[in-house]
Length: 334
Image (cartoon, rainbow, N blue to C red; front, side):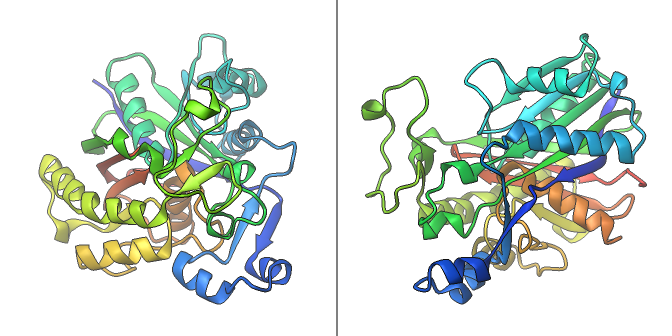
């Protein structure tokens, strides 16, 4: 049997960079120093008006192929995690297959998950490789939440950024991923949602649990999401460790979804670890939804901090409500 191994990662960030200084000039009433202290975000990349998640994903994949000498013909399956697809149908992954010139024998699908999406995608790739359906999977995470956010929405515009990552998942002889744990609580679906644009008429769509404060299509109940995360994720981590046969003291990095600084510092306190083991690296990107974890891996690798045989946890949580975690031993040598 073959097993999935996380290989090289490439990223693509939109050209436009929106800084906190720019927002302070536009909105003098916004206390950007206080907002930055809570969010941990100094700037974010914003997709151009005609730029979609697929465009970001294609650019990230092209960079992956170019920088790591990967033959597109070797890709057996494309997994695209996005909540901002080009169209309701066809699946955007099919369009990406054509744009990248991947073989027609290649499988392709979208899955609509947000902040837990990278962990779910790695699990799906692992299953495809273990069952023999694929040997090489292209996992794409791409999001343009900015298109759902009203320009005057202080609560969301200051947090979210647009980005895409392309991750190569290769077949390996030894397992490096284990202890997968997943969770779902659809009763919290109204904590983070876009209530328009689907097949259900807007008057019948899920309503936010509180009065909508801003004109954005995207609604987020930040305090409730924070409470959900702090309540559920420490137990999830314990279960991952139990399934993997690892102990907390063995973990080199807790690689968490980069939601906000306030939330991640809360997890640091509950887990009794500091930023050297639970890094907070969202100041340059903002919360990029499903791309936060691969961006984190990319940055740590580039800094020489993430080395072979390190024991790490991958954890995502958020919209859905959905969460997932796994144990991961780094095997890619760059």
